[in-house]
Image (tube, rainbow, N blue to C red; front, side, top):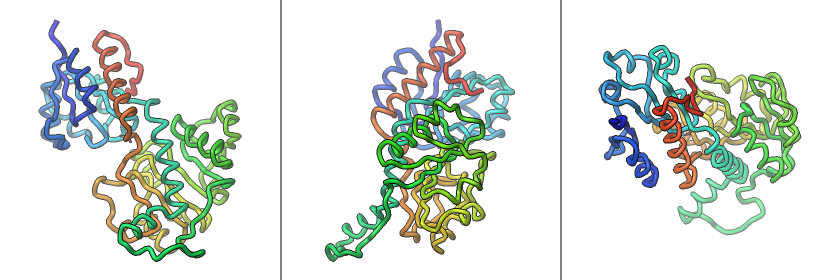
Length: 323
Ligand code: DGY
């Protein structure tokens, strides 16, 4: 039987690329430069499967091409708001993602940002590197504690729950959650979390807010100036979800005018071209979308895509089918 033709849009960990090549007729993107709209239109005619990432924006117009050969998009990542799922679905193209395997690492980077923002670690590191540190003094770069504080989590899926475990069991934090659907009591009990119906009712009571909801149009600007104004002046906002969930101008205004204390961001609207005004906010800790960036996780994500492909091409429904 002829091997299915697969396009991998970015470089993957070597072990996973080798494994993929054992079963499939694979084209790798040797340049590792994100594909263009035209590239995608061509690819849809040529490959049985395309394996995109968060950097591959696949809107409706890409699918308007004729003679589509592609039957599955095996997304390398859990978030898939960059793919127009409803159009893919209407064309009978299966879309899969890679949940579970990146929950630990994304939760870890969330706690990294909470600590960095609270303890002003970015400011401190910049000072040392610029040879501007004048030595210890009681008033130098004083931040704020995590221990015993209240953490609000919007979106209590796998990643949100892992964040809650670390914050509650590691730092004794009280957990408040807001989620579209009702969360099972047994899950809430693991971290003594309390579910609050409305975001507006959660915001005034928390010291940290961490976002773990999906991106896309449904959650665009979920956190805007009105929401930031409901938060405490000492509060810290963390976004490891998707850039569009936070309104950039509102957050920059809030950071500059001390409406909130600080922010820790791993994701951005239109990344990698983040709003440059963030660079003028010393109270913003800025990471370059590192949530899943560990060897273990990046390999596990790749193997999870392969599992989905194997299931699909052997006639089963892939375990991570999202549409
Ligand atoms: C994810 O899996 O959604 C990560 O943000 C990388 O895309």
